[in-house]
Every structure is written in structure tokens, then in C-alpha cells.
Image 1 (cartoon, rainbow, N blue to C red):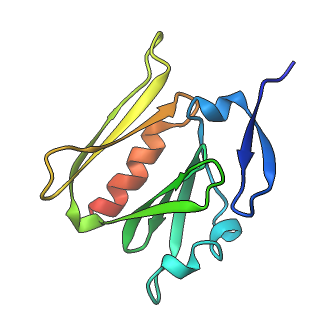
Image 2 (image 1 turned 90 degrees about the vertical axis):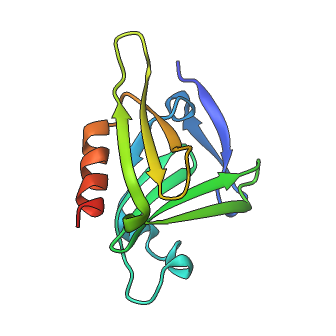
Length: 140
């Protein structure tokens, strides 16, 4: 037996997803599948190199910045794009999921702010891989 949730894609069409997505199961996304969807927010000569989906939200790693895409509301028509140049990331941390703790956590501190951006992930995501990608971009 499967547990389903109802979700709306960007065209207002109802889609069904497994309960795992509600629990924060992030997965890597094929870049070619989303390149056109996000072309309007990219600068000239900027390209998406890695992307991860977390429920409806996205982490886009471009060759110039990290873009956090926060899809809001029931229909998903309202979208926040949080652009973070890699040079503005002062430090970040990960907290792995334990035996009884289901969530892994990523915290990103940006220069000029005291409070980090916090994102939680299901332990199915390889948090080490995600932090490795972030490290490779911030250490350039």
C-alpha cells in the first residue's frame, strides 16, 4: 500500500507523490530537464551545473552562485528565488541524521547576517555529497 500526497506543478496540474517527499527526501535533478525552466533567472553565460529537489523547492548550483528556489502556496504560482554568490558564503555546516533522528541538516551563513539559512533533509540524501558540492564551489 502506498501513501500519496497531492501536489500542483507549475502549470497547475495535480500530480501525486510518495509520502517520502513530504519527509524531505531530496534528490539530484537532471540538469537538461530544468535548464529551460530557470533560464530567465540566469545571467548571460551563467549555467546550472548541479541541482537538487527538496519536495517542491530546489537548490541550483550555477557556475557563479547558489540559487535557492522556494515554491510557495498551494498552486506554486508564487516563487522566491534566493540568490547567494559563493563569495558571500562565510561558512556552512552539516548535521548528519542519527539512528533516532530522521533529518540531516545543512546550515549556510552569509556575510552580514547572524542567522544561517537552514534546510533539513531526509537521511536518504547523501548529505556528504551535497556539502562536497557546496565546498567545491565556495573554495574556488
